[in-house]
Amino acid sequence: MIKKPILRVLSGESVWPPPVWLMRQAGRHLPEYRATRGVAGSFMDLCFNPELAAEVTIQPVRRYGMDGAILFSDILIVPWAMGQGLTFAEGEGPRLPPITDAAGVDRLDVEGAASRAAPIMETVRRVRARLAADHPNTALIGFAGSPWTVACYMVEGRGGGEFKHARKLIHQDPALFGALVEKLEAATITYLLAQADAGAEALMLFDSWAGQLAPNAFRKWVIEPNARLRAALLAARPDLPVIGFPRLAGPMLAEYAARTGVQAVGMDTAMDPAWAVKNIPPSIALQGNLDPEVLIVGGPALNHEVKTILRAVQGRPFIFNLGHGVEITTPPEHVVELLRILRAA
Figure (cartoon, one colour):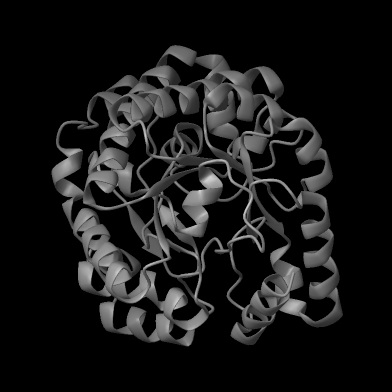
């Protein structure tokens, strides 16, 4: 019998009050995270230190009593594990040597990626053991970036902006971009299954830049790759639930939900939960979608927005979350306030 609230929702049950976790909950808004980051050194050093990465993953569960623990890592671990260089410049985000031709794609090593990512799996094992001992009702969520979003970074060599090079490439040389996506899919499947083998109880696919694409391109480079990923995961682990988050998909979210085979879809801040309830099949759980800025403000605005979301989704399998990640300026006491409102629902 499934007892963890998030896993109950992902199995199709409506749980009330809804379970909650927050994207980027293990991160910069917490003083304990900043202290741990100071011990680790760089962001990459923290990601690849299983003891410290496990501690960071557990910190928001310990402080807030979250129903989900999201693995502390990064969506660019997969390209790094395939051999593409990756650094994080302080205040500037990731930097990668851009892949612009077939030679760059050919250099990517899918077979060696699993061994390079082994420290991440040790983090998963440690977190799962600590949750079992101290937080038995909290589910461990593993994740990866979806192929379109990760490929954007790999082609552009950095984040931010409108990813114009990637958006041009899918039209100028779809065969080259398709070859890159094919390698990404293969490495991502191996990476996600390794997380599941190490103890992840659910997986999340982050397609943060899905909203950059027109509908036909969205179908080809967001829906189809995520559907293939989900099919491969389902064949290997039939009971492993997957949450898909095609950020800023708009009305394409309904087609994504129907065609990818995921158990839940994340709603970004711009999505109307009432629209999602009407247009997403009722067998698929919803997750989201409080504006992170409202969490910074707190008070009456937070109370109003939370209750508006809850009214829209009541009776539906639902996981409360933000529509994007926790901001660095979020007061921890406002997260406590949010949890109070939810648990009184």
